[in-house]
Amino acid sequence: MDPAQQQLAATLDALDLAFVDEEPFTAGGCTYCYGEENFAELSGPPHLVSEDMVSAVAFEVPDHWDDFPRLYRRLTPRILRAAATGRLHVGAIASRLLQAAWTTWPPGQADALRAFWPTWWRATLHTHPEAAPVPARDVLSLITVATGTLRPWLDIWTSTWTASADAHLAEFVDDVLFEGEITDLSMGFHEEYHATAELLPWLLTDIRDRIAEPRLDDPEYLDFLLTDALANRPGTP
Image (cartoon, rainbow, N blue to C red; front, top):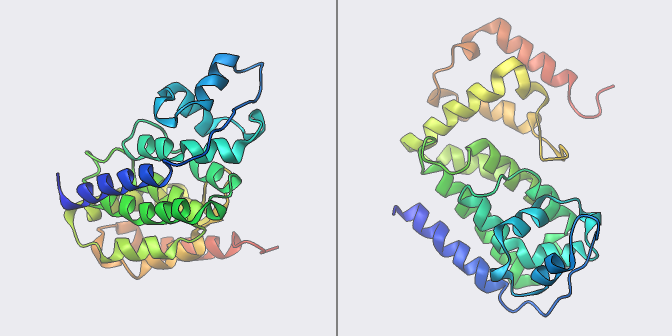
C-alpha cells in the first residue's frame, strides 16, 4: 500500500475512534418506509448497522427521520468509509452533511472530518483513475460542497506532480469541457457551489501546461468559454 493510501486508512480509523463514544440513541422515522426492526438496528451500535441501512441513511431525505442530524452523525464514519472505498455512491453525501450541520458537531468529531478531506483528496490524486474507487471529479465535488471552499483542493492538485494526478486532470478537463459545461458548473446534489469563477481561471493558468488539450489553443473556443462564463456568473441579469 502506498503512503497516501496508508494515510487514508489511518485517517478513516481515526474517524471511527472520534465517534466511538456516541451516547445511546433511539432512532425513529417514517413507518411507511421503515419497520420497527430497522429503527431498532439504527438505535444499536453503529458498527453493526447493515450496509443497506447505512445506504438508506446516507441518501434518504432528512424528513424521513425523527432526528436526522443525530442519526447521520452517528453513521458518518460508516458512510464516509463506504464512499471512500467505492462501496457507496457519493451522491448526496455532502448535501446531507450540510443539512446535519457537521461543523457544529463536537470538536473531536468535526476535526476528524476536517482531517479526512485532504487525506482522501490526496489519496485519490495518487491513485491512477482506472484504480481509483471514486472519480476525482466526484471526490472534488463532495469535499468542496462539504467545506464550502474549492481553492484549497485545486491548490493541492496543482502541487501534486504525479502521473496519476495528471491522468485525473486530463479526464477531468475533458469532462468539464464537454459542451462547455465549465462555463456554468455547479457542484453538489443541490448545486450548492458554483465553481466556474474559480475553476476556469485555474484551468487556463495554473495547470494549463500539464494538459494536452487542443480546444484550449483555439482562440474562438477560448472566447466562447470566457464569454459564456461571464454570462452565467451568479447575479448576472
